[in-house]
Image 1 (cartoon, rainbow, N blue to C red):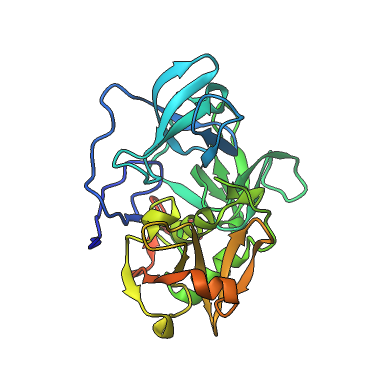
Image 2: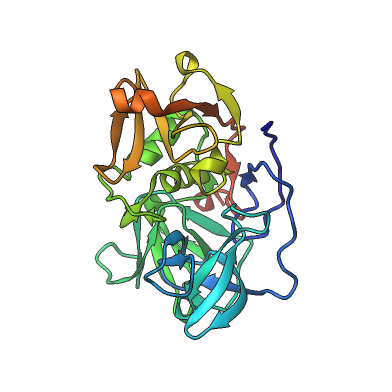
Length: 310
């Protein structure tokens, strides 16, 4: 299949700076869908309306969700910014994990740049925690005060405060070394099929999250991540390139981030997030190629001018 890059205008919270890389035509979201937001730090999406079903992905705090219908305590949803179909990632989410509330500020957001950020009651490091926000979550803010951003939390009237050291006002520089620094923050995270946070993550979730922090929205799953970017031979791999594995090119089942010198970072059921070697006999047999995602310049998030410089 010949891949191509599709540039989309993303309407989700804080994603105006992000370039979406895809390989299929873009279709409009279903017309009768209601827009909602994730109200908890992380919410699982299942293949059918039961938590015994396959977990296919997760949504993060304030992430935009399209609600297509309901069945008991479950909502049938699409996550527009996680590409699986042209309209987004389909599945089922508990309705209590969603709110119809829209952020009051869509023009100013910060992105969580650490594995786990703490949102506090007051702008002090010893203040009680209101919530946590995981790497790549985007939070609307309306005030900057002595190294703290005042942010909105869904379902709460009172604001919270997050320290500037834990968030970004612009997508980080897109070079390979910087991207790997972001991904390494999740080292030793346990493996979780469909996971997207330090609580548990899968291989394609690790890749998706790292690139999101650096301004690129890749498809959510490894088989479709294999269809974007530019093919790279094994001998030409550079740090930050994607490396893919599986029985054959029609059955991609694993992805990692190339580290250099024959090693790559991945998430697996055997060891969680850690480095592996391309020269391991089983890995070498399953290797199907690399892909390079070209990144442009650093990009600001909405309202992302350094608030301390204003």
